[in-house]
Length: 604
Picture 1 (tube, rainbow, N blue to C red):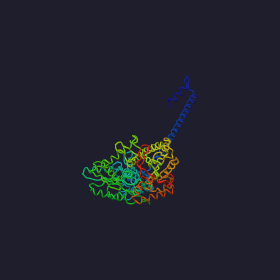
Picture 2 (tube, rainbow, N blue to C red; picture 1 turned 30 degrees about the vertical axis):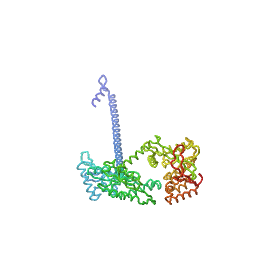
Picture 3 (cartoon, one colour; picture 1 turned 90 degrees about the vertical axis):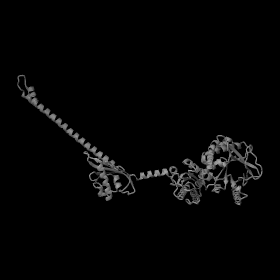
Picture 4 (cartoon, rainbow, N blue to C red; picture 1 turned 135 degrees about the vertical axis):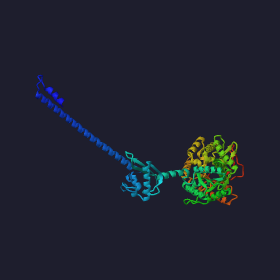
């Protein structure tokens, strides 16, 4: 300040040393005015600074409030129970919405209260002990899948609970924070999934996986203790017919009922459904051979009893094959294969039987599997032949031929059709083979000097797989055979199952100009209803009735009834297997093995 005044005096002094007071006054006034301006600028700066600090503080408070609201919203809407307690006395200081639902009370009834004020004494004591353990040790507590002791949902719930300690800035215990998650549904679902992985969904019996595990354990135990046991392979007889006739819902109910009977009769043995209509049973250790056979016979008798299912009375049977450890196999593969061999023998001998494995059965099953293998190559290697069997009137006039498939095996010779046709139907090869037979029959018939009819058998599998209508139409175009000369023979197996689809396909085939014949008439469930549903061009009486005409009066009556029915419906009838006592000519150099005669029941 003094330096400023001295400068102002020097600036007001002239050369003679005199002070110009007016000039000095002006300088002092100017200095005061500059000072005032600086003070005002400083005041404004301070004011702006204060305002900025206030805004910053306000924004900080707003951010803090939003952060708190965000955290509160997150905690409030977490779908599991969240709580916080004062670490000193376990008073509840926070509880979210899921916590209210879990405990079954509003948070106002819990906040500020201790467990003793909320829960029964024995529960409060446990909660306090857990809280003290966490506070004293500082170690979080985890309880997985324990039964619910408190809460509105009752005592049958399973929960996961966690508690951890939160300390303040000085490291002293401040809060206990915990979460409680209801995992009842998850654990139940996991248990159900595990159950389904080892049990059959339809019957609730152990499945193939569980059976294999049980067999492995049984073999290991038997090897260590030198025990013996039996494995039973079971198969329901005629179950496919039940599915085809009554439908799969009835079949499913029948399967459950049969499984219940097996499990009840097995008397503690390990019973498993390994797929389809197949079951396996593991008998207890060291059970006698006679006891195993007795049980198997009881099972056959039990399943063979009439069973009412949803107002239906389907009849099924049971075939059983038995293999004993260690006599019939010392490992799972051999033991099961030999039990299957015994089962195959039981079914081949007429079903509804019990058979124990014998060494020659293994060779028989191997032969069957080898035949299946050879069958896959038979078409490719041109081993199939088509024989043409005459169809004649009673007076001997030949009016057509039926194409018969024969297999000339390179080492076995001619394999009977009843051996290889079922195998072809099982593995689906019948579709390709059937198409080949159709093509060969049509090509041969197109070359005949007379326009005789040719009849070809169709398998139900051909109706279910592939495009039969397109295939036949293409073959007729390729061979040039007039459609009216082709007659396809079907059994009622074609119509069983999806009746509407099969009927529509038959109508489309008939629209092409083909003739449709019902084969094996009289042996099925509802042939008469099929005659009403579709205008067949011909019906064939099954050979079982014809072959017993002389020996069984009932067969003659059945044949007579069929003939009367055919007369009324104006449908020709073929008596399958009836012979005339005269030689049967070969046709185009191929042998005709048996003559069938038409008993005319109308126009042919």
